[in-house]
Length: 453
Image 1 (cartoon, rainbow, N blue to C red):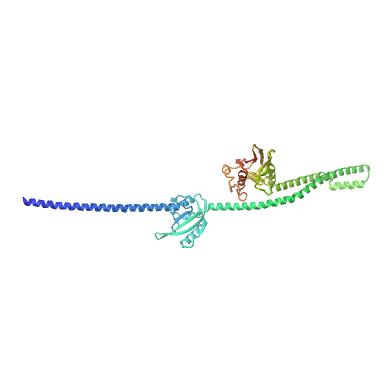
Image 2 (cartoon, rainbow, N blue to C red):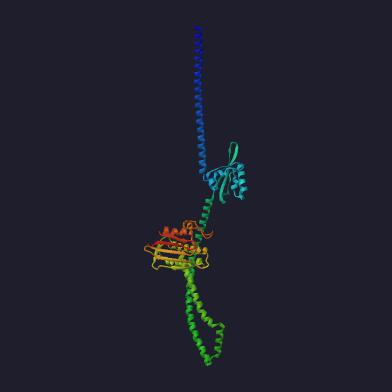
């Protein structure tokens, strides 16, 4: 019995030792597993941090790329598009995904493709960077002018091209506006010189015109007296015929009367003198108008006869409207003298009258158009309404007509400054108002109001 008990105790002790070893081994395994799990967690956290940093870096690079106003295109050596920025998507009008993998040459104007390829080869050969201008095709079939600079970069032992494309549409538009402004300034300087010359020439013409007019008046009076003497001479001739006296002289007089067609001369000479007097009066009227219109102006307001100024402007601008329109004026005699800048107001009237003539001309004129000018004395303002029966304007044109450089006229006939100048003179310099009433195909009215004081 003792032996069995001892054997049993040994087995139990052995089992206990084994169990203890297994427990310790399990505890060690759990500790190792926990340690490895912690290490794995830390590695995972580091990896997530790296991924987030990479995402942040990528987002930052994308933000930088998309903040660049110029279009940026990355391609491989075959010029297949790998990446673009937001500006490029906007310029070409094609979604980002639709650009990937396409050749950048698809968007270059056909006649410039060879030059673009040459520029890419030049960049690949590490030659000096060049900037050249190309036209890029857009989704709507149009073209956008752009300046292009191409450089290279390395990634994973592979070489890529970076195309920096700058849209120069606005630059070209501004350049055209500057050129138009320079041309306008040159024309203004030219016409200022012409105006000064015109004033001097008008003064020189005025003196001989005056004595020509005086002489024609004198000749008209003399002609009346000569006709009176001639009538008496014809009565004397008739008496000689009846009495049979001085018949040789009578026959000679009859021969001269027939040879020189005395009846025709008696009818036409007075008419010729009258027409000549009217003509020289018109010349004098034009000369006075030119003197008044070309007189050096100041920026100071002074008493100004608006009705007379409009009449002068009509005379000066007559060549613009005489063949296409009749002018009807309805002047309020109570308008009187109004404080104005004379040169400025003359410019206003001239610009609007010429525009009216052009509008009638554009519409076409199987019959004569009409320009109507009305002045009215209001309570504390003077109103000037200049209307035409021209082509009128659509709403989208009306809202822009006073903007500088806006014009609907063909190149060479308008720079878009006329009505902008009119608006500045009326609103800024005279503290007045100018409004437009128009209907397409019917005509346009400009309603101007300026203070009386």
